Image (cartoon, rainbow, N blue to C red; front, side, top):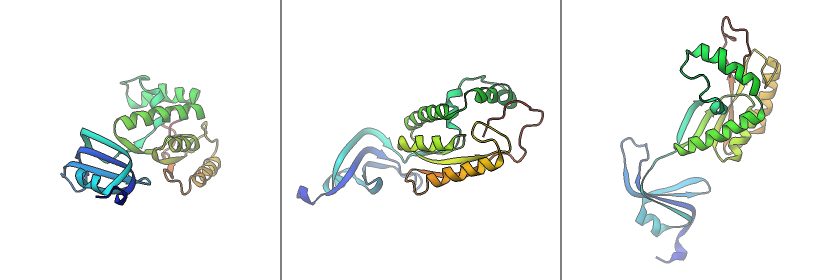
Length: 212
């Protein structure tokens, strides 16, 4: 075939196995995925792909299985920075006596940004490419995901108690609206309201409250 007749694409990923997930229980051997402008344009045998496409970048995964990116459907990724704090305790003891007091001391934009950056690196290593996030400072969270090229639905917290993010119900809603508007039409980041717990503060707890 005349090389000039090949269709240009951004990326061609060639894999020993491709597991598309849909349909169920299908494993394709020696297949390639062609990608252009961020979209998959073809899934076909490697030989056919080489005959049809002129990729700007080619990735050969000769002993790998290629699958679609995984989705983390529920996460508080900035809390990666609190990993290992008071492990193996009952939930409410862990939260009330350790996590919430720690969050009250460190909560802020830098803490949130750094935690998200670490979490993205770890998620990518495990094949996760999209997450459903719920934590404070969603403006910083969304901006960090966008900067790192990671897809996310960012929760907009609404809680009936003051935190480092907002001090009143009205402020929660006002800030949520501002963050929502700032990501309208974004290719990677979208938003959703994330109201917390109609029961409010746990019974018997009077300390810092900083958990979305």
